[in-house]
Length: 573
Image (cartoon, rainbow, N blue to C red; front, top):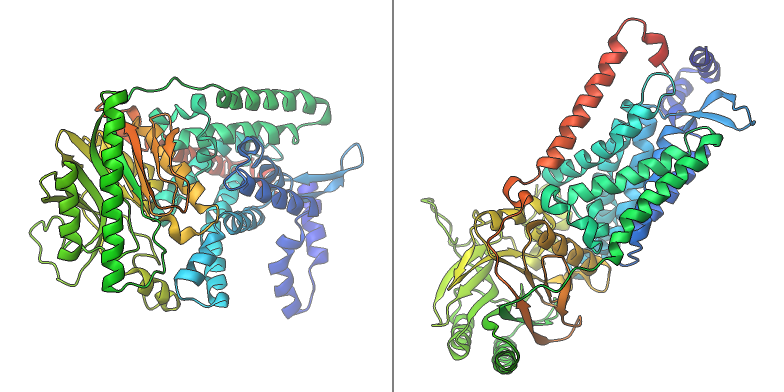
């Protein structure tokens, strides 16, 4: 009867005039959402922003999504009052659930990826209004994933007011949506599990499941917290205490520290600190290159002496980051000083560079005008022996997708360059070690980075130019995602950046040595080689795919129940 009464009331409220009727039909699902649901959405969005850097209030991750879940499952009046006189609310309809979660996603991206505005405006050649529009469109687009999560959650709601099925499905649905964000859109920035990268005990699960396993755990606790506010009041306290205890136990892993790991190698990581918008003349180019080479030689000599006196570590690798300087791998003005530096230091050198021809032709003809964002490997003899061409390019930064549609963003591409994508993630052989080199943005893709280790990389090298981000929280967000790749694959990572943070990261995700940001300098970075592969390295995103399959099964089962005779009256609401 409540469902039929709601339908009668809905029909009475609809205007009779044709035009007004159409407006009413469109706006009624929105107007029917209870104000408390909107307040919960805003609260959840704020908490989601706070759990990532720069605020970095990671402990809030255990409750950040609970308000959103409650909002989705208590969104519209049921036409009756509770026993205590409060409004009786039921789960949102699919359209309502999509809208509520979509708004949450828009707010989350705006609060977390606000740095896109500065990048577009200051470095992309876009005016302030157009850069603001670009950020807004970005939030509208990627916020759809939050919206789809809300939509799927509403479809999982059981007959009548039974929310148990939806609550049980929530962690699986969330991980499935994260997988879709990674695979379809290609922007898995700040996956939920990254918020617990400092939680050594909990984050070790990623060696089996990838970061998605931590996302699942976080969402599971959020579901327990949300459930406490969906049950009768007499059961609330017990369930809430249980949820808080579960969150506290999991968070306690942050207090546990792992022992120091032994190292047997040293690398010299150079932080160039070159302004992104520097004007380049031949004199400026040669002076900068000479200063960097001198800095590397002196720091390597000093680091070698101290390491020999204090340990048996080998310091046979120098790493220069991805750079805004026009360092072309085919330019003798660049190649000759780097080769001389390698010979003088008797070291292998990995340097960011612009490749003007593909590293591997694979039998295809390539235009001479094509350029690649590359990492070049130079031997101690000064020979340029190998190169990695960046496979996953940054849209609107390194290439312009759909040029006609997004012509307004052409200024950014003009500033950075129209790069071509590489085709191989094979490690680079540097003497007795195999280097898995990935460049900047590639570090946010779990399955792509693990392929380097799967192909035999013994240590990861990440070259990045975080100067595009300025002083926003993006550099810290990027660092945390890079650290998670170290944990998933049980690998040391040598992270060399243009403006910071340059660091040596151990397999527990801990930066064991780092340089201050926005300073030119060089650092001796300890690390070790390993050939052991984790379960995640070997099998990739199996857990995320399993969650996607379970989510699909739950939804199909739900639709099956709706189709059964006798269920129509129960599920029509």
